[in-house]
Amino acid sequence: MNISESLVARLSQARSVCVLTGAGISAESGVPTFRGEDGLWKKFRPEELASFDAFIRNPDLVWEWYAYRRKLIHDVKPNPGHYALAELEQRVQDFTLVTQNVDNLHRRAGSKRVFELHGNIERSYCIECGTFVPELRLDELKAAPRCEKCGGLIRPDVVWFGELLPAEAFAEAESAASRCDVFLSVGTSAVVYPAASIPYLALEHGAYVVVVNPERTDLSFHAQETILGKAGEILPMLVQALPRKPEGGS
Ligand code: BV8
Ligand code: ZN
Image (cartoon, rainbow, N blue to C red; front, side, top):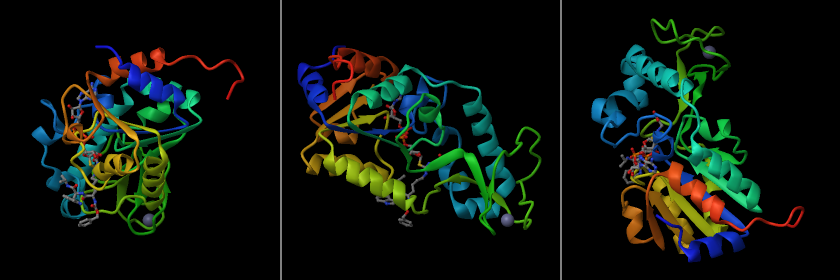
């Protein structure tokens, strides 16, 4: 698999780049995707676990699931795909990383300008008084944790189905997609909205849109390129292919 000259040329001249990632970029770290073979939605029903109603109906069950995912995410490491994006951020003047992932692996790989559209599984807060709970000891979790201040139920700081996305992160994503020269859609099936509308905004604004995924996605029909491969292999090659900027040169 090689990187097209047109992509290398556009990326090396790009003043502004925006990247959207999904579960696929964390697959090589050992984090299950949602719709893949061993995907989470194969084993669990989203409406039973990833909605506020489900949480109120059975907070212990929902917390059991999030505690399982937090432990899993805690024990894995970022992979070369995450590190390549952290490197690309250093090489592009205006770089924005937008993720649907709640696994915090982009930040652990050193990415700075990261906007989490669906929250972060490592944060939790009280649904009554809104207090954020710093470190939640989940390993001996018997029941859904309660707020020390008001006794209210604690929930993970993720966006559940039917819930609005964090306004600031979504606004940053929309404006970055609308001004970027190159847009990369990495490891996402792009079926969950409104996150999946972001690449189309970039298309409408004339960006060069590239899909990085072992499979073609809905977006592939509209994108300028689809690179069929794994993010952990393709992204390091992409960064490697970019001409090095002379030290200190902007
Ligand atoms: C909302 C956090 C306002 C929780 C998540 C318009 C049309 C239709 C439906 C809707 C619509 N607007 C709203 C809806 C409803 C709904 C929705 O989109 N439903 C879908 C299922 C049709 N959206 C919402 O509810 C959103 N809120 O709209 O609020 C509102 C309110 C009321 C009524 C109407 C509107 C909130 C959505 C956020 C839900 N929270 N996560 C948690 O994680 O527990 S979504 C969750 O699933 C992820 O965050 C992610 O977004 C999504 C999974 O998608 P991907 O990340 O793409 O993962 P997937 O497994 O699907 O694909 C992985 C890809 O990687 C594959 O293509 C695979 O080939 C590839 N891959 C595999 N290995 C690799 C790889 N790629 C590269 N390298 C590899 N190695
Ligand atoms: Zn509280």
